[in-house]
Amino acid sequence: MKLIVAVIRPEKLGETLEALYRAEVRGLTVSHVQGHGGEVERVETYRGTTVKMGLEEKVRLEIGVSEPFVEVTVQAILRAAGTGDVGDGKIFVLPVENVYRIRTGEKDEAAVTPQPVGLDELLG
Amino acid sequence: MNLPAAIPHAAKLAQAAARAVAVNGADTAWLMASTALVLLMTAALGFFYSGLVRGKNALNTLMMSFAALGVVGVAWALLGYSLAFAPGNAVIGGLRYAGLRNVGLDTGSWGATPHLLFMAYQGTFAIITAALISGAVVERMRFSAYIVFITAWSLLVYSPVAHWVWGKGWLGGMGALDFAGGTVVHVNAGVAAMVAALVVGNRKDYGRQALLPHDATYVLLGAGLLWFGWFGFNAGSALAANASAALAFVNTMLAPAATLVVWMGMDGIRFRKVTAVGGATGIVVGLVAITPAAGFVSPSGALALGALAAFPSYFAISYRSRTRLDDSLDVFAAHGTGGIVGALLTGVLASAAWGGTDGLLYGNAAQLGKQALAVAASAAYSGVMTFGILKLVALVMPLRMTNREEGIGMDVAQHGEEAYARGEGAVLVPPEALAPRMERAQATVTFLAAEGA
Image (cartoon, rainbow over all chains, first blue to last red; front, side, top):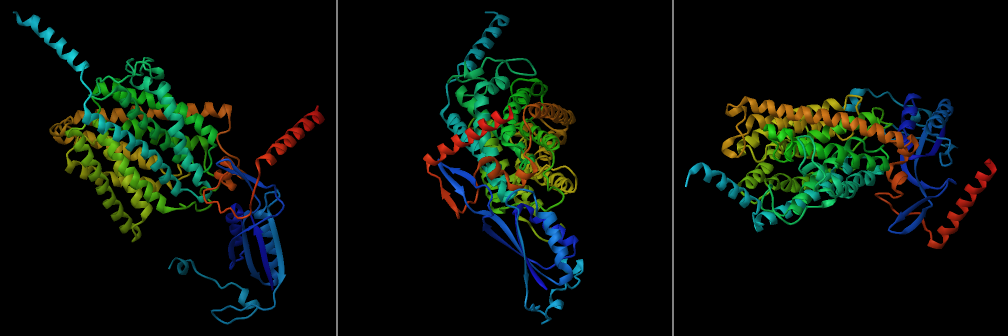
C-alpha cells in the first residue's frame, strides 16, 4: 500500500483524470493548491502596478493504492500531466501504515480496492 | 390659378418643410436615452458571455465585448456610418459622411432629432453586432486577430447590410420589414459567428472535456441588463417618442416573457428541472425574435411570436452541442435561428393596423417572401464575407493561441491579468527594477543575434 501524492498543472487535471480512469484507478482526492516549482515567474500588471506572481495555481491529487497499482498510477500521471516545461509538478510515493474504509470498516488492501459501481447507480 | 401648376409647387413646399423640421425635444431626449441603453447592452453581453466560459477566460471574454466599444465605435465614426447611411447606390453608401463630415445638428429624413445623435444611436448597433460574434470564438481566438477581424467586419459586412435595409438600399426599397435589426444585427452576426467558429476551429478540449459556465449568476445578470438595454434597441428604433415607440416598448416586454415561459416549460418537461442558464438564454432568444417585429405586430402577436420562437432555438442549442461545431456560446442557435424565425414571423404577424405592412395572417403572403429574401441575402453575404476576412487576417497573423496558452487560459496568456486574482504570493516589482530587466533581455537578444551571425 502506498499513498501517491501528485502536484500537477490545473489545465492538465482533465487529461490526468482520464488517464487514471483508463488505468482503472478510481478513488482519489483532488485539492487546489498554490506552489512554486522553479518556473519562470509570471508578471502581471494592474493599473500600472507590476507584480511577480511567485506562486502558481496547482492541483494536488492524493491516491491510496495497493502495491500492483503503484507503477500503473505513476506512469499514468507521468504520461498525462507532462508538458516538458518547468512547472509540470512532482509525484511523491509514500508508505502507508494503515487504511480503513469508513463505510465498511475494511482495512488495508481491501480498503483501497475499488468496488464496482454500476452506471445506473451513479446516475441515480 | 390652374391646378396642375399649383400641385408641384405645394409638393416642393412640403419637401422644403420636411427638410427644415425643427429639433423635437421629446424625440431627442428619448433617442439620447436609447443610445445609452443600447451602449449598455454591449457591456451586458460581455457579462452574459463571460459567465458562460471557464474562469480562466473570464476577462478575455469580457474584453472581447468591451474592446468592440472602442474599435468599432471609432471605425463607425471614421467610415462605417458613411458606408451605411450616406447617399450612395442600392448596395453601399458613399463617403459623404466619412470622418463625420456633413454630420451636424440638423434634422433629416430619420426624424426630428439631430443628425449627430442619429449617427451615435446607429453606432451602438454596429458595436454590439460585432461583439455578438465573439461568443463563437471565445477561449481560443487571439485577441489581436479578433480586434483586426471585428474592425474589418464592421466596415465590410455590417455597414453594407445596414445600408441595404435602413440606408435606402435594395432590401428596404423592396419592402422587407426590419424594425430594429433582426436581419441586420442578428441574422448577420449569427451567420458570421458560425463561419468564424469553423474557420478559427474548435477549442482543444471541445468534445473531450465538459466545458462548463464558471458563473451562472453573471449569465443572469447579463441577460437582465440586455433586456433593459433592449428597450432602447427596439423602442428607440422608432426614432421618436411616439406611439410606435410605445408599441415596440411593450412588445419588447411581452415577447421575451412568452419565450421565457415556454423555455422553462420545455426544460421542466425534458429534464424535470428548470435551469437558470436556460432561462437566461430564453430571454435573449425572445428579445432577438421580437426585434424585427417590435413596431409592426400587435401585443398579442408579440406574445405568440415570443412563444413560437422558443422552439427552434431550444432544439438548435440541444442539437449543436452534439455536433463537431464549436460555436461555443451558441451564437448561431440564439441569434441566427432566433433572428431568422423573428424575421419570418414578422412576415406572418405584421399588421397594418399596428404600423406595419399586413403579413400572411392578414392576407399578404408576398410579405413572407420578402422577409425570406432579406434573410437569405444577409446570411449569404455575411457568410461569404466573414470567411474571406478571416482568411485574410490569417495570412498576416495566427487566428488562435497555441494549445499550451489555451490550457493556461486567455486571461493570463493574453492580458497578463486574472479575473479572480487573490494576490497570494505576489511580489511587488518596483518600477526601477523593471528597467534593468528590459535592458538585460535586450542584451541577451543582441548577444544571441551576434552568436548566430
